[in-house]
Length: 292
Image (tube, rainbow, N blue to C red; front, side, top):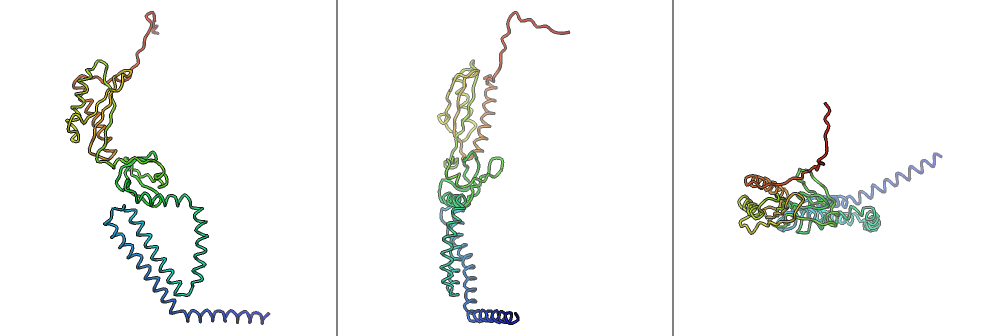
């Protein structure tokens, strides 16, 4: 038993001595490899910043610029890693790593289909020109200003200042209404007046009120006034005009202002805006008994 322990100890010491000899023999290569890898890390950060500066002159979106800079930074680090493995004479290990990476990549790809779909969609959203930071959009039943586009979600800020994070895949696959693609937005308002009103005078008064209170409306022809229907208690119309804004919030403010202006103008000219009422038709022979 004692001899076996001694033999085992001798073999272990011989193995450690061989490892120590190998380290000493390859010490210059190890130092060079460490130096090369440090240079690769430093170069990746410097090149990433340089790429961002160069891309600032382009028309690409900020998220796309950051993505390209990160990919180039990772590429520089990978090149440095391959050089390190070559310096350490670990080419066989490199082949093994690449083979294993292929199998692992397939497994990871199957497990992360949703995440990869969002990543791919994020790249698409970062590249297209119809969606950019600051745009006011409506998609997936949410409306707000685009404040960020990354590889996972599109972040929009709603009117109430809440942030909504929508997965990129849903944004790509569903319709997007972008209010910021044009320089103007249309205000649409529906209302009604009493049956006893002078319809031509109501139309003229409404159009004149809009022209005199909104700077974007220069001529009367720019206001669209359409009588729509004979309603239950009113003759209903639809009013449309343009304002110089691409924000849905500004459209809502303009619509609110229009409602106040119309009410003031109609009250000043004795024009009635009917509201639903209920009329009770009681029989003539109905008697009401009051308990004393």
